[in-house]
Amino acid sequence: MHYREPARTVAALRTGITVYGCEQDEAVLFHELAPRFGVVPTVVETAVTEANAGLASGNRCISVGHKTRVANSALRALKEIGVKYVSTRSIGYNHIDVAYAESIGISVENVSYSPDSVADYTLMLILMAIRDAKAVIRRVDSHDYRLGVRGRELRDLTVGVVGAGRIGAAVMSRLRGFGCRVLACDSRAAAGFVSLDELVRESDVVTLHTPLNDETYHLLDAKRIARLKDGAFVVNTGRGALIDTEALVGELESGRLGGAALDVLEGEEGVFYADHRDEPVECEPLLRLQRLPNVVVSPHTAYYTDHALRDTVQNSLINCLNFESERRHWI
Image (tube, rainbow, N blue to C red; front, side):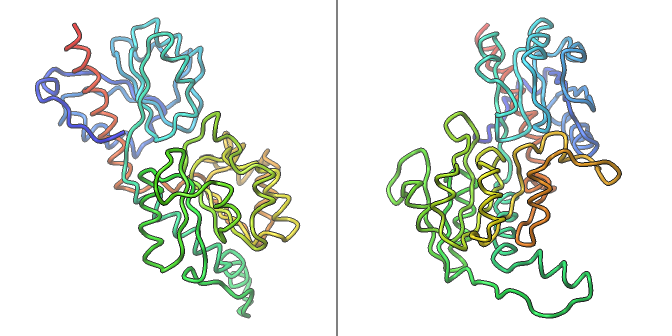
């Protein structure tokens, strides 16, 4: 989705939006930015459910976060009180049944935000993986200052980028500065792209930046993971289910792969974004990955920068205004 300026006449008409799953830093920005666009925000800390859908009464537009799945029962409840538009504060849609929403008359749209947030983080994860950063930090924290595994230099490697949208393109731009060979594949065939199978065979590092949908679920399945080079690295800042996690864990535990750096994970729901220091973590693949010295796991945080968060809030408001503008033109 591209950035669109809202119609000025609409901004003066005091549009309302209910913002569900809104955390404190987002709430501050909604309250700061909404008046500039003539929008009145109703901020709700909890995610949207059938039970709290009534908080959107009187507003045709709502905003939801990506951390909790939006149930179809919630969509039906929203429809019943007059909601016509859902803006998700994310690029991905996999937490919403978009087809079902559209079938009952609710439009769903994502937001764009700075691709540099995820691109910068991806480069950090790639460098951490190929320089064995987790093991180095663990040793130093225990006062063991000996050298460990020799790292590798990016200029000597081939990096395969899966998905050449705004984020994937930003990652490739950064990689070229390191002098490495870059391969790319994308569902939209274009000159200079390779097939996914060729990319998997040729790459020393594979990094994922494609949306999660029915076609891309387990895009890196057991067969493709088995075709990765010995010593290859896998990096994922897209969505966890792009990878067959069980197959990846097996290859990592066997020692055949060089390592992985994962900002997203299958089964992260209910684990990431919560403090589990005093309670057990009910996600066995995550626990197995965290035991490995060559695997870096972070809690779906690549997007989380001040710039990207401001973009997300501002574009959520603009989405709402543009939807209202289009509706008024239809009437």
